[in-house]
Length: 216
Image (cartoon, rainbow, N blue to C red):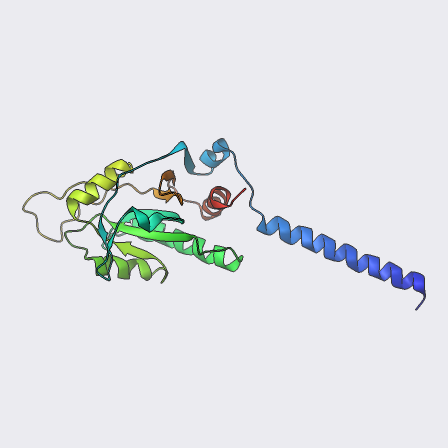
């Protein structure tokens, strides 16, 4: 094989490698969206992330969790309950698929977490809600708070939580059916950064999440 042919083949190989590298880089590099683009795609970003007060919620291992649970992590928080017939499974499945997509694309998941907080503490134990969350992904965390603490935290995070009617039987769920269905995003400083609004679209959800949490 002549020297010129070898050089030509080498240049062709280098060109193909360069094109493939650019293509892979385009696939893995997030597209950064403006606040308006985020809003159009279903995510509302607060101009300034919001502070909220400390809290105590219980995990399945008996530990009491406070705001430190959010430290140094991007956290998706969903308020739901284990007997939820429709909305909760949809939102939890969306987060499950997001986790799987991030993992398959090689994203660092050490600074990301997914939390379910029950809005039905009268019927959901900490073990119940954690087991429910982990049915979607074993890394997910389900936690529970007493009603006064739940109401305080939910109010600060703009989540509608209604107390159960007095003297109702334990299976009563009408007060739970119209709960807020947003998925909240807490930043690594423990501040409320914004929320994803239904109706959810999986592709838009991944696009907006990736844009917000990836360092620029």
